[in-house]
Amino acid sequence: EPLPSRLGAARRDRPQPAWRYGALAAMFLLGIAIGWQLHAYRADQRNESLAWPRRAAIAHVVYSPEVRHPVEVGAEQEAHLVAWLSKRLGSPLKVPQLAAVGYALVGGRLLPGERGPVAQFMYQDGRGQRLTLYVRINPDPSRETAFQFAQERGVGVFYWLDRRLGYALSGEVDKTELLRVAPAVHRQLTP
Image (cartoon, rainbow, N blue to C red; front, top):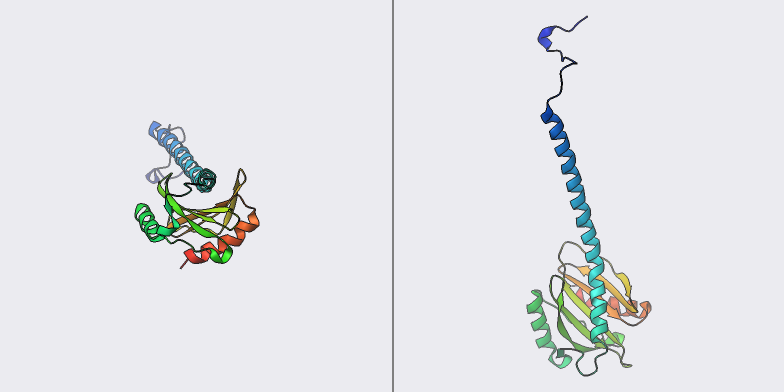
């Protein structure tokens, strides 16, 4: 039985308005654009998480071989060093004391980072082996990580994010030696 005309039965031969096809195409293109931007954002996040341990390794290689000028401010001026670098990074810094694991503070320096100033603290053991602690501002303070390890041309790097700061302990030592020192650094930096 046919539908009553008052129910407004749709006619099958009526063409769809052109604006509907345009709106459908626009929604499809918008979805592609949003997906592309999310993909680019995630790729940037992955690159950033790999870039700063690499920068820490490069800074270690550049400054650790120096004999006469390995640091800008020596360990004898530790209070000045910490105050200066804290002011430049805009966050209170601590210098881990690593005598218990066989390393003494040599001093530190200010370095340029991808997103602003970075601090580098240098340590040395009795044999002259050096480790550096690279400290940067964490762009996402809510994000924290456990220890991660990277190797960059013979330099091992243990790195982690802890609230407002990111840390990378670097050295031309084996992974076992870095793993022995990194927890001592972490314990002193984490309240």
